Amino acid sequence: MKLLASILALNIFAFANTTMCYINNIKDISKVESKKFDGGECKGKYSIDDMKAKSWSVDDIKISKKDNGFDFIYILKKDIKSSSKIDYDKLSKVVEKNKKEDEKKLIFSNGEKIYKTKCQSCHGSKGELTPQNVSLAINKYDLDTLQDTMRAYTWNEQDKGFAMVMKPYADIVTPKDIKGIYEYLKSINK
Image (cartoon, rainbow, N blue to C red):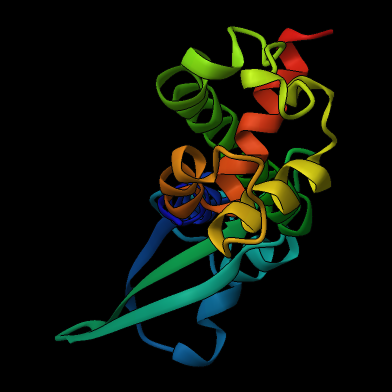
């Protein structure tokens, strides 16, 4: 969210110019915008009408009454037309894609950590062992089978003599953890 707010702020400042033009001692205010203004991008060469023709828009006007007429200060803004303008739909898709990639990396990392600290001692460094020869090596399981097996231990539906060993582990891992373990095993068994 901070990234998006920063990009929005950058877009506002990077793609808009602001300038201040002024003119003093104007007696007939009806034609003020057709007179040449000093300061900023007007540079004594351009009127407000000229600036509008150059895609500038009036953002603010300050008028002060003086003894010999009126002083005008115009704040003008111009949107810069740029091929590098940000496409917010594309930006949202990129941000969402990065979130998903970060989540995948986190799931994988957690799966690797859990496998190495909780599973590896019985199932082997690559999931290749069959503890007490009562099941397949878990590196042969697809994701659904691994998840179903862990759920079965949690619900006391699976017992080939070692449910008491597996149940505490099955009770603490989440479906995302199991997916991470699966992805980790898949990556090291290519």
